[in-house]
Image (tube, rainbow, N blue to C red):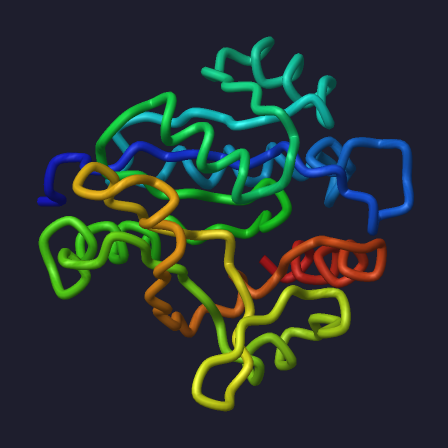
Length: 213
């Protein structure tokens, strides 16, 4: 039996999406017949370790805010000053606890992988880590055709890693700013988590992946 839910999910959906080069808000762009954010929400339903889900939008994404409210999700509207600023503001407003973030532009989440990570963070080998950033290797990203020039990279010990949008946060013992300044990186070998849609080229890759699922 799976343990009781431990983390509050934060779905980050407030970015400007300027690299897409379209007027449509990125979370609302069509991917394989439905909006990209719908892919994320559909998969999060299967994550058993979530105590709840709060969608963090911003003044950059008013139509996304309206959509999420219409379909019944709790929404926190941040100032739209950037990912870290909006995340920091959300955590400070919500207060101490265990959190896990997801990104509206990483559409192919894998509930089983996420649940495994949440167990590790709540009571396993990651329980002493306040801020865990989940990444995939450069090799894995290349294997699924990700256009590497469009992806934010992390460098560690001479190797490149790419974000999955999943970040686990233990907030309470120290201020938020201090928590977010000290990331611990964990690598997962799940190709679907390498798909991060930042450009139209990325969207074309995501369409191909969607057909294979």
